[in-house]
Image (cartoon, helix red, strand yellow):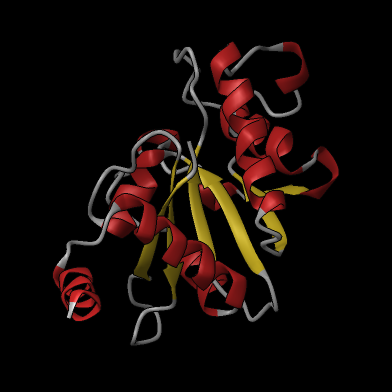
Length: 186
């Protein structure tokens, strides 16, 4: 009787953050998803026009942000989650987050991840991003480091620092990618 009661309570208990995170990791182990990650903590104040190629000379992340970026990469490695491709916006804080977490040689910059450059509407989702999500069929996952505003435009909510949003193609071609889970990394 006690076992039945325990099972019943487990069935009606709310999902905890821990179990939601475990479900997200399990989903990523299946592969084929796009992971959107905001840049790690930064001091702010970066100009709207990114200084391409000048990131080695500037400290775009705080010391805490540097440690966060490294921890994020270690979490993926510890969970043995396959990441086939790592993309970053051209802003130094996004690029440095991706490089510290996943290795400098693995990161490729994509201009469409620069959601706020040139006064662009932060609610606009670049068509190139939608296409990249729709055309990804890897055995692992693809990870994109960008501004939280772009993640908000897709997911409807501003991600917390250290929170990734897992997305998949929309039900209809060209539509807004659908959120399938969230992952707390920090």
